[in-house]
Length: 331
Ligand code: UT7
Image (cartoon, rainbow, N blue to C red; front, side, top):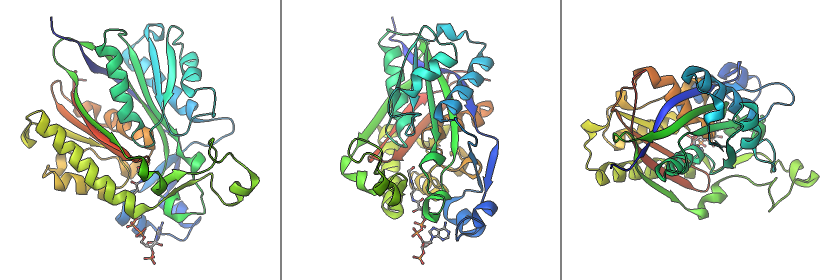
C-alpha cells in the first residue's frame, strides 16, 4: 500500500477592507509612490482597523472562508495550526481562540512562529501529522496583523508591511499528490538584522524601550535583501535537483512576497519564465505569514490537478527554505 501524502484540498483568505495606498503614505512620511513602486513593487496594503481586533480576527475570517467554500463541518477538523509572528497575546495561543470561534471543537490547536517563514514551516509540520497517519484533517492558517508591529513614522518599514490571512486544509492522499519534499534551514546569527527587539522575555516592554521604539520591526534592508535572494534561489534549485525536475516541469513558483525585486531576482537566477512566478505584492505588501496562502487563494482558479509547485520563503531568524508540492484538484 502506498504511503499517504498530505494534499491541500481547500483554500481560504481574508484581507481587511481598509486600503492604505502609497498616496496616503506620502502624507504620513517623507516618501512617494514612484520610490515605493520602483523599490518594492507595492501599490497598496490592507490594514485592520478598529479596537479589540488582533491577528485572530484575520485568521478566523480566512478559516470561515475555507469552511464555507469546502462546505466543511468544522467539527471534523482535528488540528488547527496558526502560523503567525504577531499572536494576539504572549499567552494563550491565538490558535486556541481561533479553533473555538470557528467551531473546531474536536481539534487541538497551537501557534507556530518563524517570522516570514512561519507558513512554509507550518506546511512541513501540518503535512507530517497527516503523513504519520495520526490525523486526517489539519487546518493551517497563516495570519499576521503586521500593522501592530510597525512604526508609522519610519519610512523604511511602514511602506512594506500589510495585514492579512490565508488558510489551507491538508488531508491524506494515496495517489501521490501533495507535499513531496522540502529543504528547510535556519541561521540564528541572522536575528540581529530583522527583529522586534522588545516585548519578549529578553527585553520585556518598559517605558524606556517603548520610548526607544524597540517594540517595532527594525531591519537592515540590504542585508535581508541579499540573503533572501541567495537563499530562496539556492533552496529552490536544490529541491528541483533533488527531485530530478527540469524547469519545464515546474508549473508555478510560489515565493514569499517581501519585495518584488527579490521575487524577480529569484525567478531570473533560476532561469524561470516570469509567467510562472506568482505575484500579488502590489495589492497586499508583505503580510509575513499570510503571503503564501494569499497567493494560493488568488491563483486558485488557475491551478490544475497535477501542477508542480515550488514554495519558497525567507525571513527573520534567519529562516528559509523551499517545498515541492503537487497540486491535488481543479477548481
Ligand atoms: O520578509 C522578509 C523581510 N523583509 C525583506 O525581505 C525586505 C528586504 N529589503 C528590502 O526590501 C529593501 O532593502 C527595502 C525596500 C527595505 C529598501 O530598499 P533599498 O533599495 O535597499 O533602499 P535603501 O535602504 O538602500 O535606501 C536607498 C535610499 C536611502 O537614501 P540615501 O541614503 O540613498 O539618501 C533611504 O534613506 O532610499 C531612502 N529611503 C526612502 N526614500 C523614499 C528608504 N526608504 C524610503 C522611502 N521613501 N520609503
